[in-house]
Image (tube, rainbow, N blue to C red):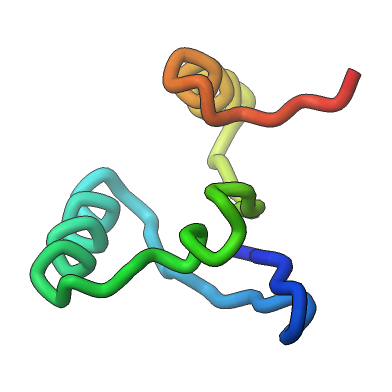
Length: 75
């Protein structure tokens, strides 16, 4: 995950999310801690690096991100 901050510059970290369970657990921890997500620093704009085991999985991820309207694509 990478966010750009006006003062700190580029901030990056590893979320270590490998499954839907991990993603749900991350969201639960965020809600339980009442912490703000880092994307709040940037108005929601941030980057993630994803790794997929195969092309089909990659296509499913892209499609879901498009459906959720959270995929930025260069023209």
